[in-house]
Image (cartoon, rainbow, N blue to C red):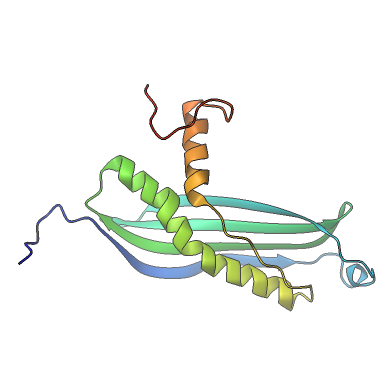
Length: 160
């Protein structure tokens, strides 16, 4: 009934893996002495992409969480969650969006779980990363690259 043609669009997740991870709590056990737990946390996200073989791409999502009490580091947790994605049949613009949105969305739940586990095993209260809107981050990144500020119209359709 359905014919298979060479224009088939397809995304196959070939492999998901940890490329690198680290947990650091340089001021233990002193950080456990305080009765009040109100650290300031900073979250940094980045993703990178390296073509691998044929239509396969390695995408790495780096998530870093740093907690501080005043200027004293409580902990730093970082994960580089990677995946091999076979992406075929898409034009360059679609491929870029898949690598910038779909792939990080796929990797994030794995990175989120590992970060939570590292922090808990470090002796700290439960830490749950909130969902991330990679679609919005991708659009913001594209707008920045195009020189469009946040104050300007950033609707989907723009003319150049």
